[in-house]
Image (cartoon, rainbow, N blue to C red):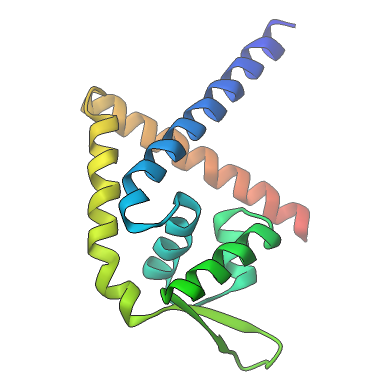
Amino acid sequence: MIIIVVNHQLFHSLHQLSRFLTKRANQALQPFDLYSAQWSVIYALKMKGTLTQKELCEYLAVEAPPLTRNIQRLVKKGYVRQVSGEDKRQKKIELTEEALAEFPKWEQAIMSVNQELIANVPQQAEAQLEELLTGWLLAISEQEGAKDE
């Protein structure tokens, strides 16, 4: 029974941390009329290049309906565009020139808030946390991939 309580508390803490980080990212992006969910799409496209909506869903681990809404909002703002892929039914999403020009400002806002949030964490603990989270995410991704096969 103790293990269940510890796991419950661990996941509750992770959820609370995630909500707090999202709130702070939203505050940092507010001057640019962006939200963290939109930033996630922009950042993924900047790092990975043009992706299909399905690839974005998988990479960001989000459901299609909210991702579709965020893509539509980003299209209206002129930050992303949808282009036809080899298969006409498949739309690829890419950043516009405007988004590429604005990206450094958005990234700086996020980097500043991230630096502020991690400032009191010792460097060794930060490295350990990075290693733990990256390993955990990889393990979960592999499990999910095995389920899909």
